[in-house]
Image 1 (cartoon, rainbow over the protein chains, first blue to last red):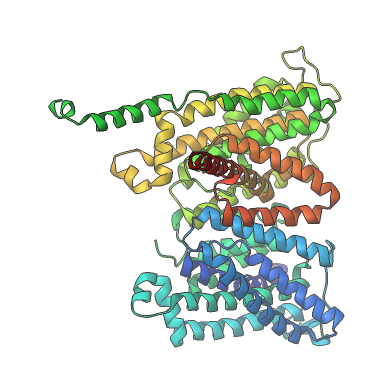
Image 2 (image 1 turned 30 degrees about the vertical axis):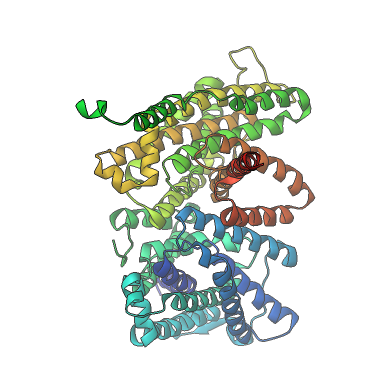
Length: 290
Length: 342
């Protein structure tokens, strides 16, 4: 294969895997922010918590990687309900600033707790054999783990799309994002809906956190380091928009990967430049409501 | 005029009291001397901790600049470190690459460059609100950091510009090992800037800012040029943050790209919230309390300190939304009430 085509395929493949990770973590954040307008800077902390649950389950209890991912998602989703009911609920009507401060505070506490129990050194996770090495697709081989990530992401997108666009609960969520007051007055219990989406969103974030260990390594600073990217995906995609989050994750994931392949010195510059460009033209993101 | 002559005396009295309050609220209260007395006393009581004291003063100045836009105009930004960093690098690069080591002209240059950046970015960004504004301000700061990293041959990158040397102040006051000159220098700069900020806050312009914070729609409705006012105060605050950054570089004699960090933006916001927003002296109390706590607790255990600051933030949002000064005020009111009752 010619040199440039080879690089283009690599960028597309790695970018796609990265985009799937971004999407899995950000979609829940987008929907909860769209529903309640709640600025949740602790979302990265839920992802980090998921990562550490996976590390503990695989390293200490010897549970397989995939079952550990599932358990982490459910466990973190369940725990997040406690936070939503106990803390977040009090601040739905508060200002952006107060929400930002509360959730930054929670993120700091999460980072400190993780450092206390796991130490600041990045952790890795033992993978099953079928996720190690490369997979040959005929014209060239790809790392199995990234292929797994892309397939898993595609399946999740299909499932979430079905739940969001074709089920009764999905219709209710869309109605509440569009117009919360109207939805409440036709008898939709938006509070309950919010708790549900919050739990699902946090669970997905935990899943994303578990998946990220192999890609980036897991250290306590994960909670803030990648948070900016999740928020950017949400802002660029448009609050509460499924389509928008997917599109933003793909665009940003592939551009970031391309930037790092072709122009390594610039680091994350391209992602932020694209973000500023998109938001200046469309302040509410690709599919957001003005 | 006829109508005003026929109003009843009680209303007239109330009106006069309100006018007197408006006319006198910018007068200096005796308690306002307190922080300055303490700052001067610290110079004599802790002569060997002046390097730390100087860092506190720089953060007070930085928090004060944030108070102008966050506390008075109600602009929530996650990228205020951009202007601090620009100021820091104006002086740093000036000294390292151009040999411009005169400190006071350096401060002015830093203020001008940061203010110009504030004008340009503010002009574009202040049309937006909520999450969009948060992301755009954050992205601005990170882009500056990435740009610095891209040209690390010029900026020194994350290794920084170490060992900068500046000329003595006015060509007379050299730098001593204990940082006493620096402390006095920072204190004088802070006092001058503070006087300027205080004038702004109590001017009609400052009133218009408070109006925008409280109710944007009404300010639009009465014909106030909202966007122009916001850009103006953003520019001023950016300039002040630039001065704080320049002081930081001059007094530490080094600077690295970490000044642009999100953590730096978040830290100054935490300080301001802790002290209390929209009340000038919140910046003083918040920065002092935060820095002293950090100095003591992070020596014990950085993890413990980070947990503590997170907990403090959560508690502040839930129970003390007006900061430590707000709590003091509440306590004062409560005591007064008790006195009246008994």
